[in-house]
Image 1 (tube, rainbow, N blue to C red):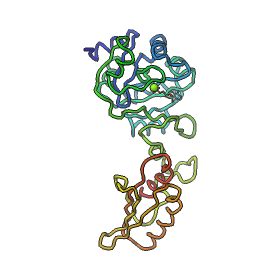
Image 2: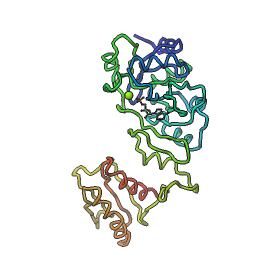
Image 3: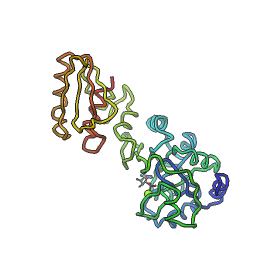
Image 4: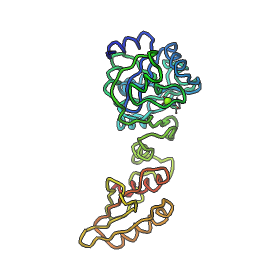
Length: 295
Ligand code: AMP
Ligand code: MG
């Protein structure tokens, strides 16, 4: 079986190694070695127009690869790394153009997997790594999936099944606003909240973490309501008032502030909300609920 030390030596000498991360298995090469990175594109059949994510083992290592490290990047890295969030920033010339598909920027993250972190530290270089599958094929979440795609063409470090299972959230941190480039399991509303700096100008109105708040303390319960009806409960239990909210986002949104005004006026000591599901159609409603709960 391939050891981490052996894998690191292969990477340093310009070869490819597949390795586990918490998102999916990556097909890794030394990100500072253009010839090594070219092997990734060739083996995957990946078009040269698709940039690769560079994996590092620390914030310090990330900073050596970028021309700017704005406070927003620092805030997001501290909050979410190691984890499934890729930050896109202006690159330094240390990153060959082939890694970034000719873009002046580079996508970077610290993966949350002990094998990946040890491998990067042992190799001592950042690893460019897309998913370890043929271009347009299914992404691999086990070492076996990688072997099915590439056979013996690439050695695989086995770190068990991936815990997150889909690719990272990708966010651009260049310029005055952050932008979502690819969705992932870290939601964009959470990311926006993490970079909101108290007192600084916001790119859009209503971006304060605490905004749209009722006077009554409001809590979001953990799980969506299992019955699928979105229920708000104004406590205390002995005189609880239960509000059944619509199961459609548009109808829910139309009632949202009206119900909050009503409950505020009634003077309940607290409000509990069973949140709707974290799906695309509920994004705006969930954003307002999170802000209302943030007091
Ligand atoms: P993957 O195929 O999982 O390695 O994902 C690579 C993805 O990362 C690309 O499809 C882009 O969405 C994103 N990405 C990486 N680098 C950059 C960059 N410099 N600028 C914009 N997006 C990037
Ligand atoms: Mg991929």
